[in-house]
Image (cartoon, rainbow, N blue to C red; front, top):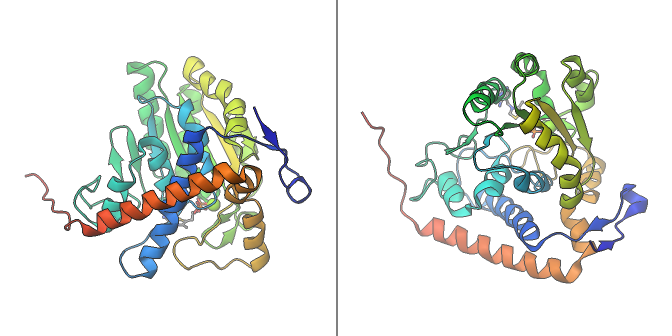
Length: 313
Ligand SMILES: Cc1ncc(C[n+]2csc(CCOP(=O)(O)OP(=O)(O)O)c2C)c(N)n1
Ligand SMILES: [Mg+2]
């Protein structure tokens, strides 16, 4: 594995390892998808709302090869990266958000409510955890070795349904993987103002194993998580994985109330800048490719007619 020094003085971080081509491509596909969404909103071509995963793209990319097609993934309001990592389908998702033909959910789900095979997202905080626990129970009985994954934010640990689900998952030994994208903020409230104790402490209260990772290196994250995720499958024990991450963009669109130094801190930790610095040539090529692909996807979706759908009787 090639290792290049990163900005260790600023970040206290170790060197980044060379990403596989497909990982770099996927990271950049998600980044450019999200940037384009914000541009389309600014240009008045999108309606409703959206929450981008800018800064957090590496989380689903790192997890992707640890998952199987029979696993069930539950996503949240910040879910475009979760979807794209699983399906690599920017056209279906953008058509969905734009309400154009070819939309993955006929345009009725929009940015936050996507259903496709073993994938479901919701904009309601905490809603997915009890459902994921139920699906994990079903998988345990019907497809041993499969798991249910639920992505939640740090702010969602204020929802009571999270604890009911963790209680059941621990008692019933459910293959439930809870991935916490701890970006230090919930809309405009810093975590320190809304979360007493720690996520590790809360998992421990239920006897559920917890692992926290601070890395943005997809290879390192996989090496850390591989054996832990395998244990969820083979021993049917739930697991909470906490990613210390950074929200690079606004909560939704143009609603960033954070002080400039906090935004600057997030920028310094951005995987994009760090990979670009560590692997400049490879990065520049892949970045241009991803930008061109997303530009073509946006043009293609914009040229499509509005989606038509009628509920069946
Ligand atoms: C039950 C419920 N309450 C409030 C909201 C409005 N809301 C949407 S996202 C959000 C903050 C979520 O914070 P966090 O879980 O940390 O996720 P992040 O946005 O940081 O990814 C809030 C309050 C909601 N969607 N659902
Ligand atoms: Mg958060």
